[in-house]
Image (tube, rainbow, N blue to C red):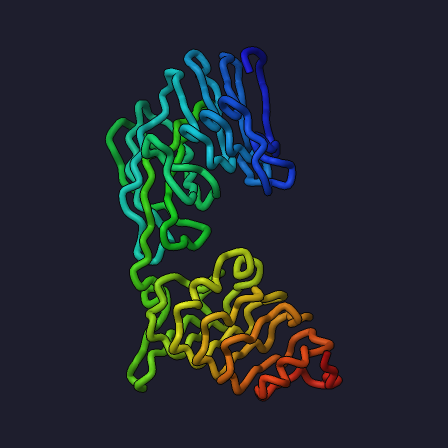
Amino acid sequence: MSSGNNITIQSCKIGTSLSIDRSVPNGLAGITISTPGIVLIGGEHPSDGNYIAYNGAEGVAITAGSNHTRVLSNYIYDNALDGIKVEAETNVALLDLSEISANGSSVLAVLQAAVPGVYLIQVFSGDKCDPSGSGEGRWLVGETTISLPDAVPRAFTIALDYQLMDGHQLTATVTCGRATSPFSMCLQFTASLAACVLCECDSSSGELVVNCQARGLRRIPDGLPANTQRLLMGRNPLGFMYITDPTSKVLAGLTQLVLLDLSHADLAVLPSDLLTGLRALRTLTLAGNQLEDLTMIRLEGTSLLATLDLSYNRLTAVPERFVAAKALVRLPPCFEHTFH
């Protein structure tokens, strides 16, 4: 884009199909800005963001002289070169992400302003870094506004709205006035027994019990000890996030798990491979959810399953194989004993 003023590019798919499930790349950058006019790519709300991925060069390239381009709340990932390249001379500050908290809920940042002003910092996570070492802005996970009176570097903590997974990379942009920086250098989150940081791990009874109940978690945490025998995840808003994350991979290594409690967790559906690898599982509690259908759940390898609590769900039928598994199935009150 080489001319124009007050240009807004929002909610577009650039380099992807409309359904975002396959690449339709541009040969060069996804968006190139070479106008001195005012440009907004994305917006203040995530719904304003553009999907910019799989392109042959940068995701967004801002050339010299284009000093009034803001890049906000976009989904920028898997481009051949950097997510955002800025050749223009701007007064945007320098930002360094220095440390992620042990439980992945916040990040420590250091900001050095070129001039006094109000600075919007947006933090993103992604699966990998760009070739230059800067991050990719695949998911917006946190933001804050900082007012700086001078050019003295200042450290501050940014809370994250999304619980990070092991191996995720963090990066950030800084926007001041009408200009946005490139992505900062990326910082990797490594979960080191994160479950025992987020939750309570207790082995005093002779069994390792990981109690994560009612902690506001949206997914099962990484770093569960391999010898976990009882995992209590009840009364967490697992819901949609539980299904979209590869949670079953987190559980797959728990070969000693005998009890899994997912009660009152806002679950409407379950991953088909939820129980894969849980060969010692004897009790599964799914009470108090919104489950309507269990036909996709596989029971292979769970021959020891003795109790399955399905009470207080929306089920109208239970697959016959649950009966064949010889598990004691606790059903919703007033449930018509229909099997198929």
